[in-house]
Length: 297
Image (cartoon, rainbow, N blue to C red):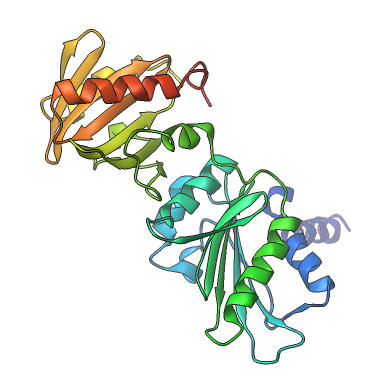
């Protein structure tokens, strides 16, 4: 009798997944299907960090550093238009910051941006990418006469069903107003910036002014208060030196890297930039960060 009871308990443990293994995006799919305008064409599929490569082989390495929890994939068609087909991908990330970070990787200059409150979507006739809360969303439509309406329509439905904010992190908003900032180039990087792991995680944006061009970098406050940053910079950045107690420099293959601290943050400009041009840019940068760098995010 005890053996039978033990076997039953073991089967129950196998059959019922742990609570944190449940896919929190499935209710969104079910709610969309319940409205009747869209019908599922295939069974919904879900993937986690261990098998993500099975669905997005070649892209999984981009998502893993941002703490992906689940990917839910659903194929929909409009009930009133046979032959239409939209692939919906919901990436449940570790945090809203990480969801934004993935979205930023798909953001480039000269893309069309459509405001779908409270989010902004990068759109084309067959695609839409946006984030809200902890979810990064990709929509891909089969090309055709109604593909753009399908993409925008289902994106609008999903935005309304997802919880959380669609507003970029405050650091990204600060970068957005910097002198010479190039639209569509703000990134939140979890791995190396400018090719150096010590310059991450952080935010970057390309810029071009009348006299110089390059990158602005922003490293948020470190968990240890930044005490280990200088030692790591000295080990990993070529030609690293402290020019003054408030200004450091390194010589990267793409040019100079000028760095200074603002509160707990580290800010930098990088490129073929002399010190006399870098310092005004850093001063302008520092003014944009008032109230942002007082504590860890």
